[in-house]
Image (cartoon, rainbow, N blue to C red; front, side, top):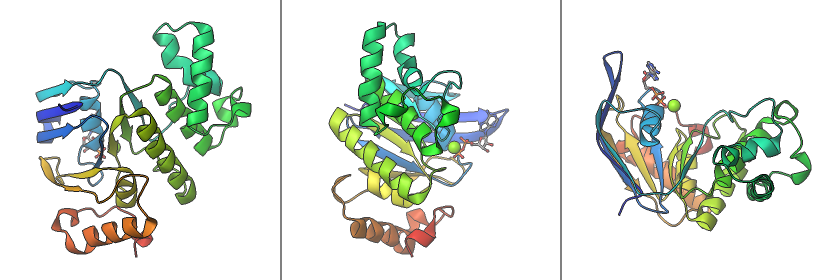
Length: 249
Ligand SMILES: Nc1ncnc2c1ncn2[C@@H]1O[C@H](COP(=O)(O)OP(=O)(O)O)[C@@H](O)[C@H]1O
Ligand SMILES: [Mg+2]
């Protein structure tokens, strides 16, 4: 039974087709990396899958209880401190104040956000800290499915790695499944169980590859080798131009 199943999804903006014939299923607890060149419709597909955008064609079936989203920009409320930003979805769902506070603090710890910074406002936080707040806000609702839309693209390489490890650990600990959009094949090969490649024009799924090993248990050398093999020898990845190839050279 899939946590998320997209069937024959198609979408258009102002009459211009951006996605068509998309079939994609994610099993409970599975992390699927969705890759494809910029503009091929990845974000649109995530918005459709998460129920934010109504698709023009096709159906979305979900079997998870609760989902959360993490975007490229942290999207924090500027007038609320880190604690209140993390607790915000809990407030919307009517959780009592003391419970919100405890859950926000627990989620912050899981996102490796320092408790001493919980009273700070977004403007006082670095980019990495803000993204930790966004992850903590997602974890606070105790989701069993998380949509990630290029969450670490704006972060430097070292920080990106730490954040990836955090997501791997959180997914393992809380058993959530995820659809993780990225254009970074290294990231996909570290974090996911499976990589799905969208067609250039969003016209269907070009193909998919199971990734060897398990997220969190892969040696760096293995991840490098996997990505190198994809880029050198696998026709599925021929049209992925915007990956950072310097890191696998
Ligand atoms: N709200 C919108 N209105 C009109 N066109 C859009 C809108 N959102 C995205 N697009 C267009 O749809 C295509 C796919 O966009 P998007 O889903 O953001 O791709 P990706 O996330 O893969 O970069 C792009 O050509 C983009 O310009
Ligand atoms: Mg996008």
